[in-house]
Every structure is written in C-alpha cells, then in structure tokens.
Length: 435
Image (cartoon, rainbow, N blue to C red; front, side):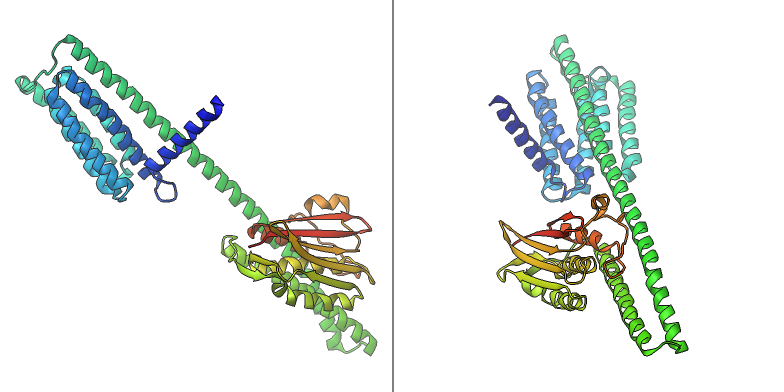
C-alpha cells in the first residue's frame, strides 16, 4: 500500500514538473531549462525574502521581492507566451541589477554578494543561447569587478545591515548552501539532458545504420533478381528475331516470356511501393476501407493466375469488415502472399483466403496446400536475408515480397505471422485493427 502511494506521489510530481517546464512537443530543451531555472530561482528568492526580513535586512527583502515579481513575469512570458528571448534578457539584467544594489546593502566584500554573483552567472550561462555567452560573461565580470573597485575607492558607500555577528554567519551559510544546491541541480539537469540526447543520438545512428544496411541489401536483391529475367527476355527476343523457332517452340517461348515479364513487373511494383514508403518516412496515408472492396481487384487477378496453374482458389470475406488502413499497402500484402502461395502450390492444389472478425481486429488467413517452408528458412522469412527460391513450376521467387508484407502490416498497426509444415502447406495470418 505504502509503495503504491509513494509511486503515485512521484508520478504526480513528475507530471507537475512536466507541466511547469513545458511539454517536449512544444518546447525546446533550452526553453525547458530556462523555465526550470526560473522556477528554481523563484523558490530560492521566495525563501530569501522572509529570511532577509527576519534577519534585520528589510531593504534587501524588498529588493528580492521585486526580483521575485520580475522572475514570475519572465516565467509567464516564456512558459505561456513563448517569448523566450525577451525573458532571458529581462530576467538576467534584473538579476544583475538587484544583486548590484544588494552588494551595497549587504556588507560588500564581507557579505555573500560575490557568491550570489557567481551562482547568478552560472544560471545565466545555462539559460542563455550560445551567441550570447560572451555578452553575459563580460557583463557579469564587469559588474563584479566594478563593485569591488568602487568599494575600494569609496568604502564608506557600503552599508552593513547585519544586526550582529550571528546574522553575518547565517546569511553567508545560507548563501553558500543555496549555491551548492543550485549548482547541483543545474549540473544534474544538464548531465541528464546530455545523457538523453546522447541516447537519442545513438538510437538514431543505429536506426540509420540499419536502414542503410537494409537499402544496400534491397538493391543487391533487385540487381541480382532483375538480371536473370532481363537476360531471359533478351535471349527470347534474339531467338524471335532470328526466326529459327517452330510454331510450338514459339508458343512455349511466348509463355516463358510472359512469365518473365510478369515476374519482373511484380518485382518493380514492390520496389516502387517500397520507394514511396521510404520517401514518406515509412508513414502510411490511412483511410477507412471496406475490406472486400479493397481486395476485389487483387482477388480477381490472382484467381486468373491460379486458374492458369490449375489451382483452386476460394475467397470468403465478411462484407461488414471496415479497416482504417492504406489500400495500396493492404493490396500489396495480400497480393504478395497469394502470389507466393500460387508459386509454391503444385497443380490441382488449393488456396483459401478467409477474412473475418476476431475481437477488435480483422484476421486475414491465406492457406495453401503447397510445399511448406523449410525449418531452416522460417526465422528469416520476413527479412531481407531471405533467399529467393523457385516455385513448383520453376517460377522465380523475389525474396522481397514478404519483407514488404511485414513492413506494411506494422505500418498499419497490425501483425503478420505464419504456420507451416514442410510438404503439407502454409497459412499466413494478417491481423489489422478494425474501426
């Protein structure tokens, strides 16, 4: 019970901090850091106002009260009005002015004012953009050295507001503790932000390397698999040009040429589809689709292809199924799976497509009575490592289709898997969320 309460308190505190510094999607890191520094400074000054008052330094308490109001206003400008640049300049200038006034009222060099200047400089450097570093460094340095020089020349200008020796030690100790705490908080925030940025950079680098590897593999597959059908087409055309074939040979060559062109077309369709997805950063343009309407043209074409190979192909789709999907991706997934089933199912075989409601998802099952997938190939079937193979009528596989099927299924928020027994057939399942 107690750990749960503590967990809720921590979770609530994190949500509060996240709200105060601004959400990541609307604020850059430097803006969030400025908001965090403003909040920290307001907490410190909110403590300093009553502390100075009860320590007998009413004028200092008034100065810090003014600074508290200014910082609250700059925080409001930055967090809610998003006037980040103006907030930095206003808060930094006001802090230096108040600390400079406090130097004369707080014992000068014998008081904690120079320590306050140091922590103010640290906070200003954290929140300032890089192109303003020299400006604030020179201003802070000039302000501190100028005050020391002025006190050296006119020591009578420095007033001591302390009532007794205890007040001096209390003020110095308080300022020192605040300096340590603020330095710790600032460095902790900076190192945490740096660590997260480093993790993000490493993750992005790994993703880029993986994408580069996949693209290299992709184009090597294209180069390898495109060479053979193009060579076949060139050879067939040369034979036709020489006109040395009989009528039967021409008919046979015509069928082989048609298959070679069909395979090449399928490969190019997959390649262009993959290229479009890459140009859109893998994002799919989603819309509401009736499943039976989206797959109607695919099923018609695949039925004709299966009939040519004397394979029985049946399709049963629940007409009420509606998906929030990308119709082109959906068609490519089903077309590639059925195309593979036709290639690896022998003559007089059976292919069944069934789409039905399964909870909140649509489950598409494509079953065939083909050769099945060898055990050693199952782990790589959806990757670019998969090797292209030949079908039951010596059709050339592409080695790319199922990789795209997985990519496109995941892009639409779905899952794809299969069950297969060598010599008994394969079932591919595609699960996509219903609207």
